[in-house]
Length: 517
Image 1: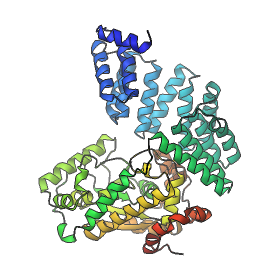
Image 2 (image 1 turned 90 degrees about the vertical axis):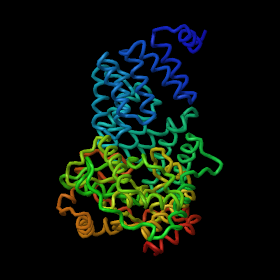
Image 3 (image 1 turned 135 degrees about the horizontal axis):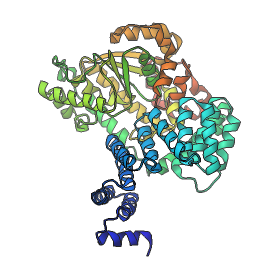
Image 4 (image 1 turned 60 degrees about the vertical axis):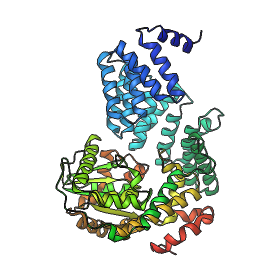
């Protein structure tokens, strides 16, 4: 009798031992039956409410569903029952990492190593986070320890390669990556990360054709790991529908929103930073975050409680514009509850909601937050599209569109059509911030931004890289933000041949935004 058969027999016999329930829960989860897995774990905890293995397994399932607070509660309950339960500490670290609380995740990994100094997964996880934070020496040390325990650990190899790349050692990065990339058993989700880092190493060596091929391999693995194929573009289709719907409305459908009294948790100054990934959004958020009393939240679905059906049709948009004051207040309160639930203190002078793709939500912002300042970050479309293609992102509905230069370009085109239509029709407090001006005339640009959002400019803004390091920037731009004012203009030129086929899609925006050569 195999383990699954034995566990099934024990569960059918209504055993009070939680282990068979956990075994079957893992099997159900791997088969895609998450509700079935949760039901089995609920039964396990009914029989053994303090069992650390059952509590930790439940935390894993909750994390995969985005229920991070509940996942942490189960990890804490497991550790209260068994303080040296390594799996609970590891899952707790994974939960904190998922939520962007990197210092707390680092503490969890260190707790594991205090129990077992040779624990490979803790070394690998710590190496990843230290590499992300710019501690290259720490990343190298822990990556070496993880690889000593398991030479095929992809997280450790990636952390080591990142540290070498940030120090400008592409050959050393390639040596760290080669053993794993040459293996036939590397999972696609790991191949996507490692091949992307190989592309970065080749890019540092100015071997552009080879770098582009490595990025292409990374994106192909990324697509395979998420079951993409056959020209699937669901997010782009939704954005295109929203753009058509917005273009079918008129400014008269959107009278200025009524004055709305404050709700619980509302910040004194509310700023949305948006535009498109790789357009300078993280840089802008880091700069403003250097001011005292400014808090920020990076790329979270703060408006996810709202019905996207409102955004995909002209009739839905009209309904949104006609919400009563009571309806608006209810939705505003839900937004601020979600912000505070992410652990953000909004009691200071300003709160920044930074999400490059919240341009999709401009109608919601106009309806619910008429007092909020919207900063639209813009950059040369050629740099944006190239950067989205060669950057490895956490998978979500939008980043799954970044698997080829053409799909990025068409998604970008759809988003720009939506944003421009929204800006022409909606009563927004909007300021366009040009990335090129930001990096070439920093003081004048940031002074204008501060004047628009009602904050006093300070020389502290010039030292934004220090505060960004302390706050653990969690986006794909973290390494660039740590370097300070990085001028990323005209990077596309080295890959102009690869971009040539998509230029007809981008040329209208290149001209409209003033980036024509």
